[in-house]
Length: 146
Image (cartoon, rainbow, N blue to C red; front, side):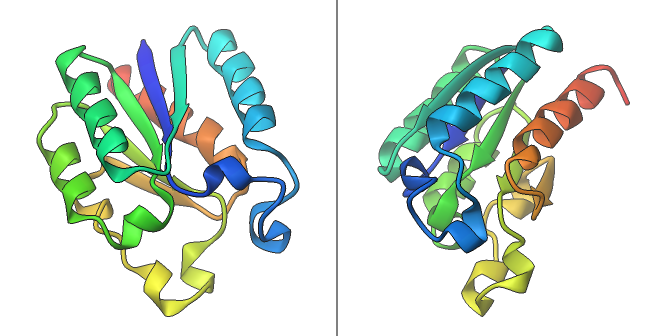
């Protein structure tokens, strides 16, 4: 199974930004832990991060062209603003699991709306860095017909 993990804007600042909401772990630490979990589950995982909307869209398109089995996506603030990322997800036959480290429904009102949720296979929010493992697990179950 081949999966792409995408992180959007400001997630490269994990460990430095709003620690009460996002914790103290860095993106590098998260990706290392996630790669180990993926290997244990026999998942070929590629992780990428960008602060640029177009780059995220290009990677989503490429995942569709390459026939990947899933995407775990934390689009950051683009979740609440980007119709373009929503349309990119709708344009590819790859299931996307939307993840958020913090519980967006306990935060500011604007964070409670997701353009991605209606075209995603599912959404996992509020369980810290574990949302990424849960996203991978959800894709595994989906791939196995569960």
